[in-house]
Image 1: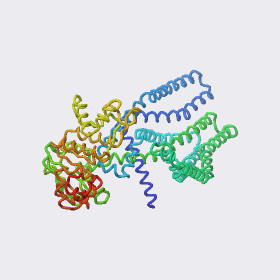
Image 2: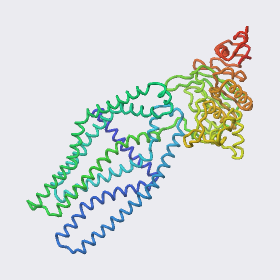
Image 3: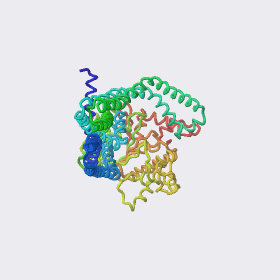
Image 4: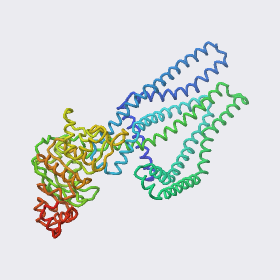
Length: 621
């Protein structure tokens, strides 16, 4: 067996497993949906087979043999009541049971997905392959699972119905079964060839469709509006659009003849040959050779129609079965992913007293690239620490290790002398209040964006948020909004929502760290979007309000670190220098060089005063 064939068979086997997995998942969430869908599919195929195989034959035989009209009517009435009840069941099913079940499935599926997405480690969201699977799993997951259940039962009962249809036709006339070969060839040969052709055509069209989608997107996105009006880039976009349209036309011409032929052959084999052929055959047997009764002819023609549509439905369900298998693969691999740092990790309670946090010989690699190498540092409780260094030195990575977004590749991080992996993760992270540089605003009120769901007494919430906004410097701006701190941020759900500047948003993020009561506070470039005056005020407030906390902050602006108790300078993937501001200036190393270069940009030197003297004095910035 060739490797290619083996992979294909393994893929089909996995697709079947995935469909079974999907049915079990839906069964756990909403068993009544699965049961009702099975019953509905069964009744649908049963109705087709009953009418074509039994109903027509009974009525015509009764008429031919001269049976009493009352007996015929009783049979018809009974059948009408039975199928009327089935119709009522389907009406209730589609009008009440299924819509409610869909809501239950939606809630259950996304609860599982949200819980999983909340529980996987941060690195998963930074892995493009994993993230692509995650987004594909999330996209219309409930609808795709519902469709999978329907397809599975369509395939199962379609296969059973096809077997019974063949058996009934064989019972009536053995030769008539041969005509079933036509729709089988039409569906499983020519239709499949047509599907492969569509796939190849869509693949060739994909680059052109992506170009068209890009241009359509660019034309209405706000961030492109200025350039579209200030330059002649629209002419270039128009040219690219026309080229893409021409490309689509060329691809269409390339496949037209073959597509027309395959479509024609599919229709001829699926419908024409069996319908016309079986009618001619039946008419000859009935009229010319007199070897077939009118009842048999009626049953054969009726069964022909039912069998054809049963085969079409079975083929479409079987095709969709394997197509859905790929979607379920994304969903299944995401739900079955084993987290390396699960958010629900249990462990010991770390308490609230911080004596020390120590990095011992810590190394960390991200995607096989070493970011930190044999790093050692210590944070003592109640002290203020600054992390400085060039971009890419590993400062933010170090904070992510401290927060256990990642675990070290080598070495260990200790809290009060114990490995942080021994602590309950939620309780451990509750020790920290953070304000990250790459912040995000949520479409909620200012208060909610500051509090971020923290358990604060409702009667004290607004007062504490107000104090935090004052410390961060955002209070005046927030109070100028239409509803003050109750104003919704962003326009996502509220046309009157506020969209603030980058600096104002950053102040609100900083307020998050101020409002949370915890022993350790971390500020990652808290003043990157602020002017020097606002920056100075902010750091004064940080130092003052966090004097009882262990304070860690990252800053590129060394003017803000002078008052820190201890400074760690990261370079070359490790701690290159450490000490107080004065100690580092006296060392005259990397830190001192960086500080002097920044001082030149900040100082308006008086005549006769050298920039080096001002910087060394530590009074300049």
